[in-house]
Length: 316
Image (cartoon, rainbow, N blue to C red):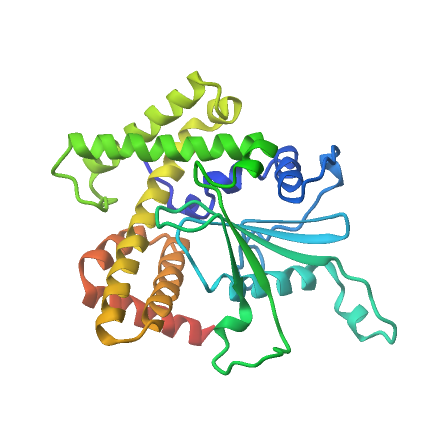
């Protein structure tokens, strides 16, 4: 199966809730509401077609609120900074610049920031990340703040939300089945590395087959049935790339955490996570998945890639 690296950013979560009907169901679940007209949602998702090439998962205006929904498979305390960039870009897109220079106050939709987490690193049902937590100089009354609520959507967490949003519950079950099938496949293929080599056809086929089996199980049990029947091949592709990227980040995080403890500082974990996440995003966006594989095996090569990434940012 040919994997299209351009689809890395299009996760199953993003594609599933790109549908307005499902997105409104998710909104209702999060807000304990019962709105029923999905056409009232005004989609504002950044699709990467601006000069900044910025792309977020889901955002929309509804009931005078601008909701930004992100999906994460690893803990990321830097998400408030990313959301700040996203929300500024969205406001710039929906509000003409000349309006901001007028003498009267303009009305803007109230922003709300939610991140849905379903990684394998343990996390409580809900967690709050604040932009002010990232400030180098702490202050009691920060003049700029952005608060992100992280919601754990792994199977067994936030049961009330899952009952209120059937699609989210079924997505959680789907992810659990995918992990189970991949684990079983790896146990049958002892020679496989913990992280798959995207250039190794055999390893990719093992993971692809496992994901396909999980999809078939879900379809037979009426879990996301219509969505999976319509998008099976693409979901398998997304699953392979998503699994590879998730495992890369987990290994780097574990190494970073251990190094940070040994060196006696906690910031190493967060900084390395941010750097690696940005580097891998940049590589995937530039169709360089093979470099991600090499970087994981060779720390010097990874450092060279990061230097290249930093240099490219300075040019822009």
